[in-house]
Length: 298
Length: 292
Image (cartoon, rainbow over all chains, first blue to last red; front, side):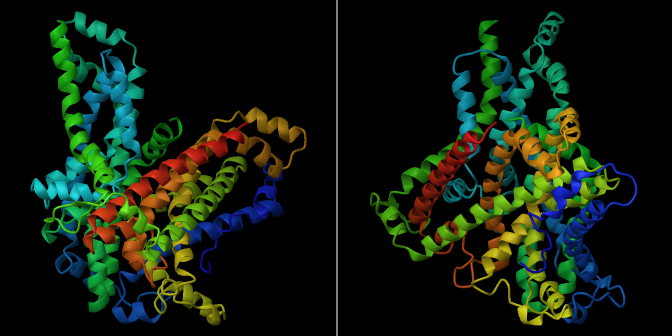
C-alpha cells in the first residue's frame, strides 16, 4: 500500500470537525488541511508526472521518475501523432461516440415517451422488460454477441459498434427518461392536440424540448461511457484503422514495451487527456447534477 | 383515431425494441442455452453435454482462483472506497473551508479519466525501476521495501485494489456531498448546541440520513469493481503473475477468445450473472435491516 497516502479511517479528521467555525488558528483545521492536501497530491501527482514524462527523453524517463525534463521533447508528441497514429484513434472514438449517442437518443426518447405517458396493453410488461436489461453486463453477453455479429457480418464496423453501445445504455436511458416524462403535466399534450399537432408533432415539438435536462444528463453519462469503452471495442473491431482510443492506447503500450519509446506513449496519454479535461471543464456542473438525477434518486 | 394511435405507439417502440432484442436479449438467452453445450470454435457445431461445463468449473483451479480474487476485490474495494468518499464528503460539506470547491474538483477528476489511461498510468507507477513508488521508497531510505508490485503474487491484487479505490473514491464523494447538502442544517445546528462532536454528528446524523444513498452506492461500487477490474487486469497484468490477478471476467474472456472454449465461457457467464444478482439481493437485504 506504499505510495498511496489515503487512509480511510484517519481518526484525526472527523473529530477535528468539532470546531469548524472557530476563528483564527485551530489545530483541528490544520490536521484537516494536511489530510486533504495529502489526498490531493495522491490524485494530482500521477497525472502531473505523466505530463512531465511526456516531455522527457527515454533515458530521462528510465532514470528517475522524480526529475524534471532537461529540455522539452515536443518530438514525443509528433511521434504520437505520426507513428502511433493517436489522431486516427481519436477520430474513430469521436465518430463512434457521436453516432452512439444519436442512435441512443433516437431509440430511447420515443420509447420513453410512449412508456411514460400513454396507456396501452403491454406497457407494464415492456417497462419491466427494459428494467431487466439493467442487469445484463457487456462481458456477460460478449461471446454470443460476437458470434451473432460474425454471422451477420457486423464485425469491424463502426456503425454496428455504435448500435451495440447504444443498446447497452438503452435500459438505463429508458428508465431515466420514463421517470422524467411522467412528471410533465398532460395539459401540454391536450393543448398541442387542439392546436392541430399530430402525435409525432407533439412528441418532437412539445415534449422533447421539455426533457432537455434529462437529455443532457444522458448525453454526459453516455459520452464518458462510450469514450471509455474497452471490452466491446476490443472484441468487435479487429481492423487497426477502425480502432478506438482505449484499444489504440493499450496496443501502443504493448508495442512501446519492446520499442522502449516511452516518451511518445506518455505524449499519447496526454493527448487523450485533453478532450476529456475540456469536456469536464465545460460540463462539470451538469455532470455532478446528472449523477444525482441518474444515480441516487432511482 | 384509434388505429393511428396504435401505429404511433408501434412506431415509437419498434427501433428501440429491435435493437434491444437483437443485441441484448438474444445474446443473454443464448448464454443460458449454450452454457449446456461443448462448443470449441466459431465454425464448430455445439454439442449438448448438459451440466458438464458447470461441473468442470468447480474442478478448474484457475477458475476458482479467479473467483477468489474477484471476491476479495468486491469485498475490500467498495468498503474502502465508500469510507474514504464518506469521510471526505462530510469534511468538505461540514467544515467551511474556503478551498473546498478546489478539492471537490480535484478528487472527482480520476472518475472522468479513461480506464485504459488509468491502467497505463498505474502500471508505470508500480514499475520496478521507472515507477515512483519504488524510487520514492528509496528516497525515504526505505529501499528494502521496494517490490515489483505487479509482478509479485502477494501484492498484485492489492496493487490493483489501490488503483480501483483511487479511481472511484471521488465519484462517490460527489454523490454523498449532494446527499449531505439535502440534509437539513437545523439537525447539525441542534446537535452542535447539544455539544455533539463532529464524530458523533457523522455517525448519528450523516450516516443514517444518507443510508438510502449509501445502499445504492454499495451496489454501484460492486458493479464498478466487476467492470473496471477487467480493463485494469487486461492492460496491467494480463492476469499474472501465475494467475494471481486473474478475475472472473478476464478468465471468461480468455476461455472464449484465446482457448475457443465458447460453451465453457458461457457457463462462467451464467455463474457471474447468477452470483451478481444474488449479491445485489443480499447486500440490499443486509443494508435494509440497518435502515433507520
